[in-house]
Length: 113
Image 1 (cartoon, rainbow, N blue to C red):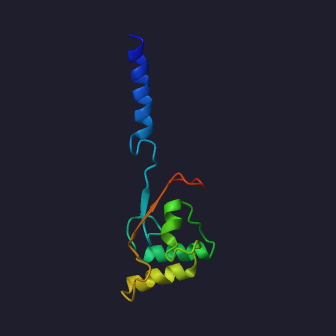
Image 2 (cartoon, rainbow, N blue to C red):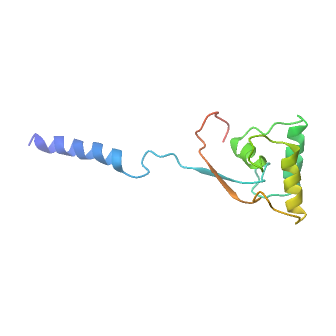
Image 3 (tube, rainbow, N blue to C red):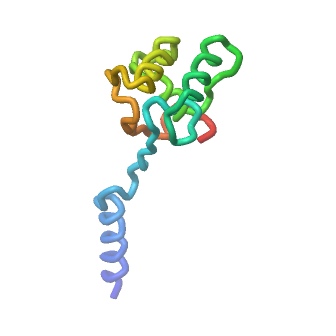
């Protein structure tokens, strides 16, 4: 009788370790170019990036900064706004605007999402 609780405890520990996805963080998504976070890519995203570059406002949320960095170089610059404008004018889409970006929302630094 004493072996049954021990076996059950061992099985619970093993299942907690080996169950796929039990401890893995879920990835969040954002849309490349959606700097204002409304789920669309439009001229308002260009304006948000321009205001960020002019230091009139700051894109704080992780999903906003990832979406605004269209070229993926780690910086939000006026070039990123230009790439969105080119996409909106149907000129070119070199950086896969509207592409889905997957990220771990629990990576540091913490933000408000």
